[in-house]
Image (tube, rainbow over all chains, first blue to last red; front, side, top):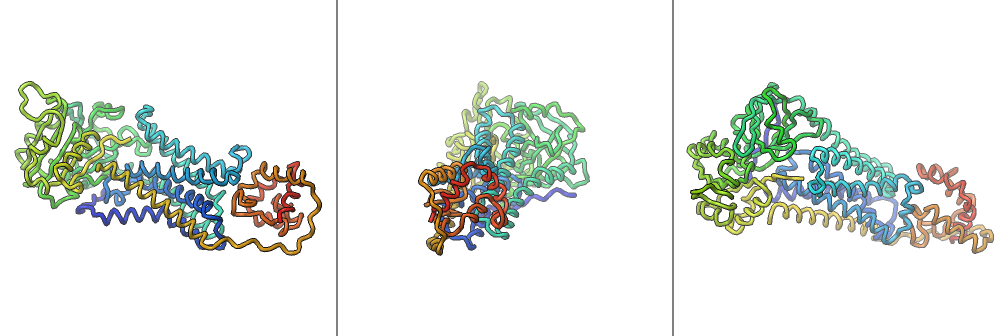
Length: 449
Length: 135
């Protein structure tokens, strides 16, 4: 079986974004408005508003599962980073809405909440309170994972488990307390709605890993690069033409852990999209998992859930030229783009700004020299601690550095940024100051939770 | 604007729209004022119950968390108002509804089981007195 083909498409349009936002609002509010017709009269604005916030909050939390379900179509118009940011901020919004549901009742009609004592209160009311606490816990542990030093793999498992438990408790509360579910068809509608999210969780945690498990890859080589970067070379161990991907996309890698174990890690593909049977992931030693890459042996099995992401040149095929800004190992997806362009014999103007601390640790610097011969590529190294006699750029990739090396046609280039967040943020600002339209600037997230 | 702050604003705007739509839902449900509860027909006269008993009944109403599902004079869950219930139900019916028995049990569904707990409450009769004088 062949892996899914990447979607090669033109620039995303505002229309796409509006369609998806409308779909979000519909997913959250249509099941609510379906409750409108019926025999029961209004119970006062405040009461009904508080109830509506409860239904909407639950639906918002339901959509949270969909946002990270790795649906390729849904992430396409925005880019995976926006979808993950959206997941983060909508979680806060959903918690606010759910707290509004509780808080409005607490403030205006506390008697209706009854006793909070779980031995006295009906179970479905306790379930509602438990859901609120669990959702708050899920969000707090995600926003503060680094500060609390929670291990990433442990966090992922706990995040999925806690979120599922919180959602189940919220559904229990809804079916126990949901006074709007006063007819059989309304109950059926919301039961189906709840079942949909439960099935979605099953898909993400069972069906998708199963598909990934059936397509194993073999480690063909582990290559040391400069700067404590290790390149993992993978070849398919199942009959396939290879992994068709667009340069700049990323893969979820499971190594020494089954795809079911929820111990996958996302890495940009660094190899050329024109060589689909030899996939290379270049990984810097940064954390627990990334430090184990160097111990990987030839012949070990790896699993790839790929490709994902919309960061890349093939999303903008008609560009006049491309500019890349990489910080450290942020070079990986950019290597894929440059290698692909070279394999395709592309002659368009290219500029690469490549920030590193010291010259000896500049990964792929020899290959970049070679690529500069095959492509119309200008490589601008920017070093924080340049060696004696260095005549190139020093410090960070600032507006001045960009200005010095970008051609006058810079307004017609597409820009790809990948590196630590402070770098991408400051380069985005600098490009804005240089008059580059925001739609032409694309960045890949580098460190997430 | 960075991509993160763009996503932040997008999420905030989306949440605001959701809240606005929830408010619209509530407004649409309350376009017409709720119909007045049917005027009680000639109800059987309530047995004389002294003020202390009624106060005890009111206290039991609070203690048993009846307001989670019922409202009286705007306090509690407006889904099932008990204003004037003493005029609509006789004492036997009030007892059946309070304990989830008989015909009431069928209409209450799962809640009936919850209400059966009330049977052993020492203030049950006081509660019924309290409900019966609601007219």
